[in-house]
Length: 608
Ligand code: ADP
Ligand code: ZN
Image 1 (cartoon, rainbow, N blue to C red):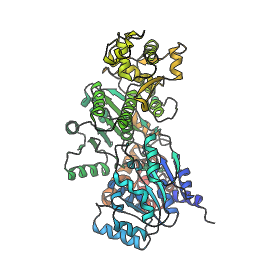
Image 2: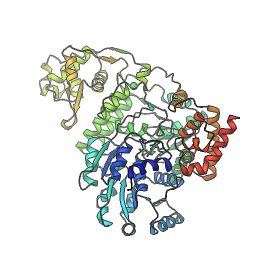
Image 3: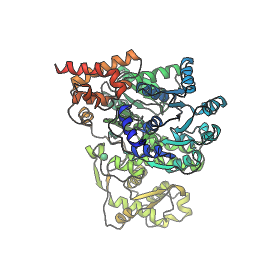
Image 4: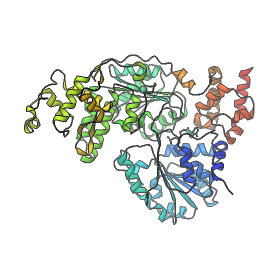
C-alpha cells in the first residue's frame, strides 16, 4: 500500500533538501494528506508553504495556490522549478511565453502547483480552464485578507468560498495566515469554509529574533549606528512617513550604505526596481514605509529597524517577522517617542473605522505601548499578548541589559485602587484624571471627586500614570476589556499587590525620552551559533562569492541557489563527498546535481 507519511518525509529530503519538519509542519501535512480541510495560523517564517507544497507533490492532481502577492508567487514558482517541481503561475505580470508554458502544462495535466491571484479567479475563462484541470486542492495564502477586521482586506477573497462549486466538485481547502488574533480567525472560518476546518495554531515565538526598543533621542543617528553594526547585511528600516523615508535613505547613502527608498509615492518602476535589488542583491538596506509589505519573501533579511513606532502590535509583529526567516539570528530595534504614541492614537481616533474596529485598534496599540515600556522580558510580554505563557528569553534588550527599576508597589496600588473604587468600569483617561485630582465633566458627573483616591497621584504627571497603567498591563496585574469600551479591571495577580501580599517593580524611564544603554552583543557569534559548530568565515565568504556568481549567471536571487543557512553549514561541516554534501540543510537532489560540484570544489580548494 502507498504509505503517504513515509512518502512525505522522503519528499521532504529529496525535493526540498530538509532533514526534518519544522515544529508544526508534520501535523499539518498529516492532516492534509488525510484529506482534511485546514486552517493554520503560523507566524511568518515558520514554513507555511511547505505545508501545502509537499502534499501537493505527494498526491496526484493539481493544487491551486491563491496568493495576492505576485512577487512572492514568482519567487515560489522559481524555487519549486529549481527543485524540479512542475509549477507555474497565472498573473498579470506574466509574459506571453510564460503564460503559454503554464497553459500547455495545464492541458497535459503535468502541472502540480498553480499560483493564482484572487482577481484572476474571478474571471470566467479561468474558472472554465480550471474546471477541466483536475484541481483537487486549494491552498489560500494570507487568508486574513478575507477579514474586514484586518488592514489587508481584499474583497476578491470573499468569492473564494464559492470556487469549489464553480469548478465542479469537492475541493479540499487549506487556509494559512500569520495573523493571530481571535476576531480575524473567526472571520476566516466563516467566510472560507462551509464547515469548521481543523485549526492549527503554532507558537508565535521567533526565538532567533532579538527584540529591542529604545526611546528616540536623535533618531537618524540611532538608525545609522544600528545599521552600521550590521555591515553588508540586508535589512529594512521602517519609517512612518514618505518624507522620512527619503531623508533616511539619503543619510544612509551619504554614510556609504547601499540604501534604497520605497514608498507609495514613488514611480511604480522605481519601486519595482528597488524591490528587485533588495530581493536579489546581498546587503541592500531598504528604507521604507509599510507600503513595503507583505510580499517580501527574502529569507536572509538580517535586521528590521523601526525608526518610528509601528501602528500597533500586530503590525510590529508582522514587520519584525520579515527578518530571520531562515531561522538564523536576526536583530530588531524599535525607536519610539511620546510624540509617536500620540500620533498613533490620533490616527485611530480620527480614522474612519467603525467604533467596533476602533476598539480593536486601540487594544492593539495599547499592547504595543505596553511592550515598549515593558519592565521585564519583551518576548514574555509579546507572547502573553498572543495568549502564550513563557519564560524570560535571554534574547531581548531587557533580558540582556536590564533596565533601571524602582519599587512601584505604592504607585501600582494607587492606580489599581482608582480602578476598583470606580467599579472597574472606566478607561485610562478617566482614571488618570481621577489620580491627578482633575475636576473633569465626567469626574463631577460620577461624583468621583469624593472618592478617597481623588488626587492621590498628583505627585506624578499624566504621562507617567499612563506609563504605569501600561506597565501594569504588560505584567498582567490589570487587564483591559475591549468589548466594553476599554474599561480596566484588576486581575488575581493585581489583587495580590493591591492587598500588599506581593510587590511590583516598575521601570524608571517612563516614556520620557531617557537614554537606553548601548547594546554590546556579538551578533556574528550569535548568528553562527544557530548552526551547531564553528563557522569558518573565510570559507563562508568564498562560498558566498560562488553563490553570487551563480545567481547572477542564472538571474535568480542568491537564496534560490542556497540559503545562508546552507552556506553556514557547508562552512562548518566542510563536506568533501557528494554523499556528505547531500546531508547539508537545503540540499535536495535537484540542487545537488546542479550546484554540488561547484560548491564541493570550493570546499576542497579551501582544505588545501
Ligand atoms: P512562511 O511561513 O512565512 O510562509 P516560508 O514557507 O516562506 O514561511 O518558509 C520560510 C523559510 O523556511 C523558507 O526559506 C523555507 O525554505 C524554510 N523552511 C521551510 N520548512 C523548512 C524545514 N522543514 N526545514 C528547514 N527549512 C525550512
Ligand atoms: Zn527577554
